[in-house]
Amino acid sequence: MPSLPRLVALSLLVATTLAPAPLRAQGTLVVANRADATVSLVGVRDRDVYATIPTGFGPNELAVSPDGRLALVSNYGGPTAPGNTLTLVDLAARGARATISLGGHRRPHGIVWLPDGKRALVTSEMDSSLLLVDVERQAVVGSARTGEGISHMVVRSPDGRRAYVTNLGSGSLTAIDVPAMRVVKTVPLPAEPEGLDVTPDGRELWVTSRGADRVTVLDAATLDTLASLASPRFPVRVRITPDGHDALVTNARSSELRIFDVRGRREVATMRLRVDRAALIGSARAEGWLDQTAPVGIAVSADGRTAFVANAGADIVSVVDLRKRKVSGYILVGREPYAMALSPLAEENR
Image (cartoon, rainbow, N blue to C red):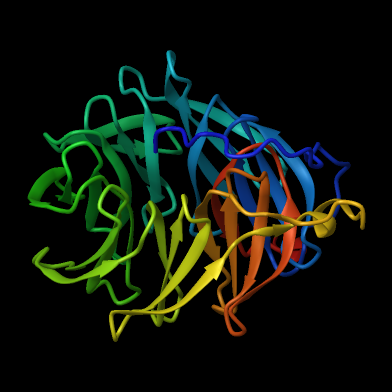
């Protein structure tokens, strides 16, 4: 996604690399800090940053491997210097294992692992392509051109045989046959489609269109539109809970998290993600609220009880209790946290 303006300038604690400590039993939250060119590793149980790992410039998106041991980060680059690399992070070793060159493919953005845990799909915005990357060989081994403008984010079907790409510039979505790496179908969507997710059963796609303030529900097999839902003020990401019950949508310009009932295809809750300044810096003298937080990335715990929301405009992650539908805490990370993913990796798995 093109850079959101920095909405606030708040002096917060910036995470730094800490001495090694056991990985938390409840897993690890991996956070890409776009302005710092780092990822933060956060213990889910303790909610503290226990390591910070350098990446390439502009880490926009990341994905954790199926076994939870690796994270793959797309290095988008800066305004005048397009990126063309991925950073492979070893979560157990707490360090970067490799930098994977994408050659002439520029502006890598959306990223998802395939079920085999050896390959990944990555969008390349500048050539409107979906790339197939062999992570073990550290090489691009296939590509499919969408023929659309700014191919931006990607998700895959549960079996990994089909991928779906939002085309931000042309207002469309493209389905791609992964084994053949060929385009199957492209359909129009409301303006500037960006975030998308697939339901756990693989039957529906939920897509946010930030330019139209809409969420579109598509039949994943036919790409027919099943519903169109209002989501005011720049909906940028959507995440379906593991049980398929709810769809969570971040609205960057209203600093809100909207919750939709997937089966009923209707909004059931809206949460304002403003931040208590006193709670952030531990001082009663810092009164009032930070209202503009620019939420973007979302991660949801395996039990569906907790959501983590990256606030790019406030340098924090909000911890959301999905049962009570309220913010239950904050995590201070790096500058401009953007994408996130959860790993179940625990100390005994190392």
